[in-house]
Image (tube, rainbow, N blue to C red; front, side):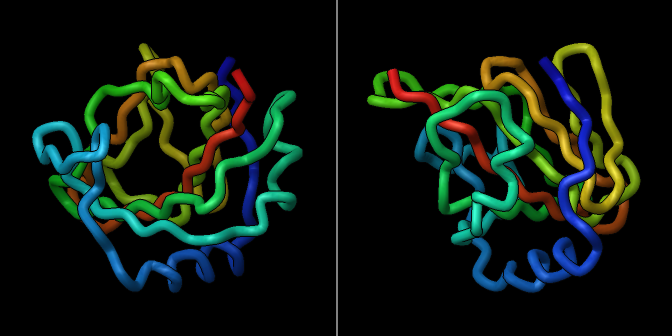
Length: 150
């Protein structure tokens, strides 16, 4: 399941970008691995009730949510969003472009998406996906996950 949706208006996307104040390296499995992920992130608390409508059936939405920044050459290579051996699991991923940049695409399996500001994708967290590097400019994104108890 992959669903393209309008999530945020322009004042919301701009406000979220302004919250990106204390970046840290993106992590993969709890560690920094710039071969797989070279962008920066910041975790923020967000009123997830305002985006619950975007997901299929779920128990709750992960919070804090992740803001990501991709400068030219920064990427997040192929991965899925499943974390094993937990009492709950990520069932669906929501990623929303806050600011697009040339060359910065979301690829899910064999499909490629260039999203406008505020536009997002909801998809099964088990699907392989990646974020490609901008050729110039900076891409900002918002990501969270709908959770289901195991």
